[in-house]
Amino acid sequence: MTDIIAPADCSTMTEVRAGVDDVDRAIVALIGRRFGFMDAAARIKPTREAVRDEWRKADVLAKVDTAAASSRIDRALMARLYEDLIETSIAHELERWEAIRPA
Image (cartoon, rainbow, N blue to C red; front, side, top):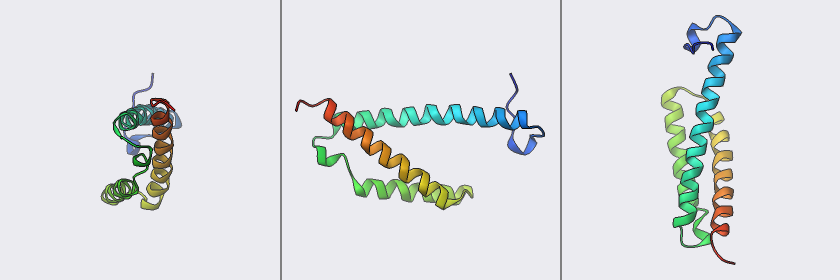
């Protein structure tokens, strides 16, 4: 297995790909953890209407924008990625909310 080195230290595509694969594994694990919190939210929220919380969505997007700006990451890119992540999270949470409650 190739050691993972910093992007600035990569000199071969094998090193770059190993780094990308390592980051992707971490991202998948973090998204899985995030969706675990969506499962918890579905269990805790008392009504179907509470699943979509536009204030919270705006709050998350604002925090992501601040984090992207301070990390010098493309803010528009992060906004697009998080818009999709949040909407997918809401859909997942709604599905879970409906699944754990009798019709």
